[in-house]
Length: 416
Image (cartoon, rainbow, N blue to C red; front, side, top):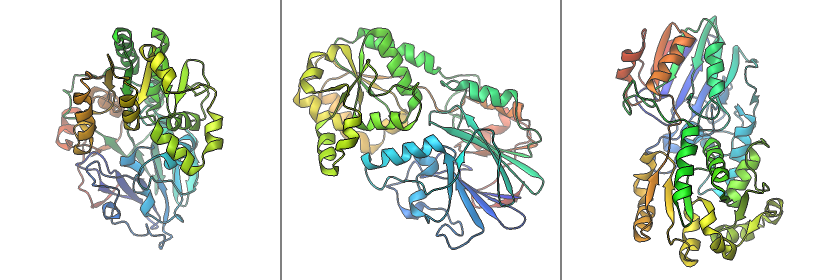
């Protein structure tokens, strides 16, 4: 069995790996859009034979989790190539697509992962493991062929709301791993001995700010970061505040299929449709969709009257409404995403708006990735013969934490 890292040996984002059996059958693991990409352009597609559907040796594309840097280029390949991923992750991408700018990728049909249930695909035996990550329905993946065992960590952590999944994998790991493709997103970002706050700690930080805020609280996070939405909701309950969401967020939460995750009809949640979204609903005739989530709908006048008791899951489409309704007096803006996104040029308009409105910005966030110490624990538990760095800007730091590190460049094929 051979492996090629098409993108990721010295880069975070745009992850893509190819696995080739001795008989020539192939799999692609992830097909992500690079973080520094200027739009979702076909030019970023790795040079992998058969992505146009012309080569039946390519059996499938396996997507570890629904983050753009792992699935974003799917829209540029043939729909005849099966896409295998988590059922809930697939549903989120399908339901979110109509709301989002550009050609949001909807994955082609394929099998759905079931955690710890192996399945055969040509010469390969594939076993997915549900894992803790900020992306919902995320998996690590074991691939067996030709007497060799390759384990792809995917993106993972052990300080989120699903930490028990990672701990379970480490307590009962698959045996005799020849190669571990190990993500190292946090190497170089923090010291090897440092750790990240847990989602529970994030919840406490949010609750403190909610309590101290006398106006409307804006929390800017991704609706697809389900762990964070749960943390925000729990902080609202602790502080007696109502969580206000839009239709897009309501649809994403519903798409998880998990009734234990906050939903639009819960009494502590209100649905507010910003004007830009209202126009979109009318243009697309999403009236049946809206009807499903109408139970707790409020209008701008209601939001004005309860602003000091509300937390808005903020999206930039809310900006005109908030301006027009004078809802920003004593407001606080909480940025709850990776700071790297905040610094991007495309967010200049948002930075200008916050400053113009004289709204204080508070950053409350934790990483979706394991700390260096967490990576070390993970590697020790799986005990692979070799560790290959991926999804990292700092592959040279791996030998500080791990033994038997083996480096490979993008585009090189090598034996497992």
